[in-house]
Image 1 (cartoon, rainbow, N blue to C red):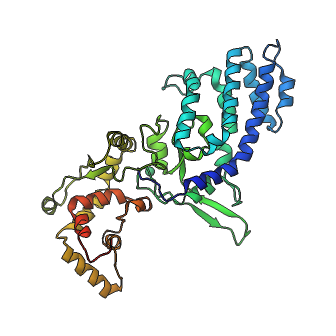
Image 2 (image 1 turned 135 degrees about the vertical axis):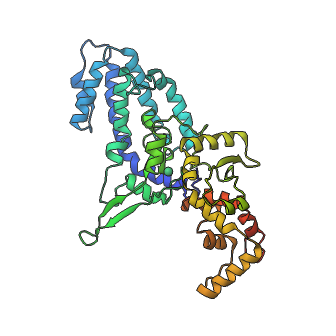
Image 3 (image 1 turned 90 degrees about the vertical axis):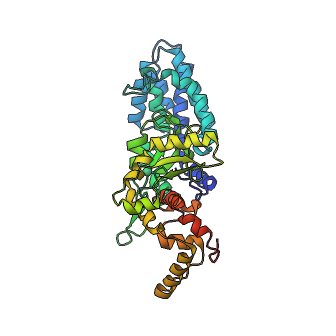
Length: 396
Ligand SMILES: [Zn+2]
């Protein structure tokens, strides 16, 4: 779990809010209108279909008819109508906080609403997460916070804000959960056809940190949309109930300085046994607090990081090979050679590491390079990092 420190989260969340708020709040108001009428007319004997229809301005007739059909099925249940009305008033009132509030704000909102939602959750093995009573509300929330059919819909107009535009603005090339897979955004240039359009070719998926199926009102919340790879999002995380109190959120923190991946292989041993299988362990760094360690471990388990890094043992072996006989004198001669052969002037420690290992040495840049944390930890274990650090002829 790599901390995404390169993003100006506050201004990007503001931009996201300004773009989605007009249509989300319009939908939220329309739905609230319907429930207001339903709430007022709940003591009527007959379902007030005409009044509800008149109250549902701005909703496509197909969606409206679906909503009215669903509401008809719960019309006799006054408690549930009151509960719906209360929830929708809350989501309306706190819409700006829901859409652009930071992770702490989202925790408060989800905890407040979950007091009501959790009572309607069916056992976890059931296909449907919420019971039939709650289904009409979930349907309405999915319509308001429309991630699936509106936000992720492709659009060739680059000025229309959608998942592709958000992914582009995140400018995060590697999945922060695994630090392995590419999540770069690629768009096609349509300049030959029409200069004002682009085609969306490839983007990251967005992981709903707090699962969309459980917290449908957080489906479009900026801080709940973590750019991530398909494997982490869809194979490992899926509907796992995770929260920022038990897991690391890459907008808030990372495990770069909290834990280390350690192979336990001695360099001399590595020389002898060429088919050495890496069997990584997670070691807690000094100064890592209990809670941070606990969260980091939970993340590693969730995304199968040990299995993934063990499977990428060539990445570790490469560092092992490069660490044999390393010394500051060797570093000096390597740099001189590079300059002589390729006129590459290596001035800093990070430049040396980049040239030597092909990865980054700076934790704030881990987000840019695949396997950066893993290789850095192996390089620390082999003593390569210590040798670089003591190379005083290099700038820090
Ligand atoms: Zn990933």
